[in-house]
Image (tube, rainbow, N blue to C red):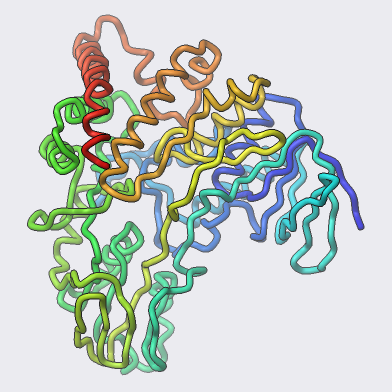
Length: 475
């Protein structure tokens, strides 16, 4: 059995694992070993449907040392006028480039793809196994094991639906939609499409169908819960969008400072154009940070056959059985399974614990920034108590009531970081932060931007003062 040694054994070469390894290479002289089941770096992006894109700009996604995209402003499509959104294939190629042009050439990174991590023994020796050859490798870890899979999302192509599917019913993952051209007999073309699920994957599937010739009347959409959505205009980096992004944050804080309930909070956020919803006549009960443009909302509003009868329990040859009823669908329906959950609810362990690091969010909803910051803290702050103070867990919201807790945790971390000079400097220069440099490099003569920052600081203080009331209202 082969035996190797390393400082850090990182389990997972997805977005978080790559961001952590990249920053640790830049900020230390540590040796890192990455182990992953996939044949290429990039984690779930290798399994994603071909038409997937980032929710938010490419400008602050990926690893710190290498730009993703060209900071292009889109001139066509539903994202027109905003920063480019990298596609799934683009992201997959990007991570391959990061691995082969940055990490491996450093001479301090080993990479073992198509390998399963098997755990460690009583002596602290870790083992992984080659999926193809079956050969096992033992690893002595000099410093820490890094779990980069804690927040790994499930994706449709590797997801098993929780409902029953009768023989002969056509259920596919969104990945199969781009292969419909392979249908040999035109009579096998789907007569109808039914999207199952209400999250961003379902929205992507609906937009793809509409953009590729499906009529709105041919599409049904099973939506157990409507969702509040982030207006993508508020996520744009760059000075031209200062009023939308930083000004938008000021508006958000103002809403938090004045809200009297969770429903009131989201309605205020909608009123000042920070939150969107697809169907205004329905009150959303879900928020998972899905981010869209108004153009995408307008497209999705063309789908009017929305089925709000709870979750699907079974797909029968001619009917769909849901929690609250049965809907006749016909035998020519192609069902599209979009029910995989991006982030499953789970308890959050400390990020730093002895000889183990569990990568989690320290700023929602940014996993790559979070992983890079954790790596910076690991490289420069040896005290575990201080490490966990600087890297407080931020819960991902699974209900509307969770959102104030997430924002409060974000704000608490931001205040702690602001008191540390070295961390402030790193964040200001980090491409993954997106907004730190924008907020700290304002020309003193730019009175408009200074006024926005003044409003933001005052509103943030008022929001923190009102947060206990909102948290109490959410229990």
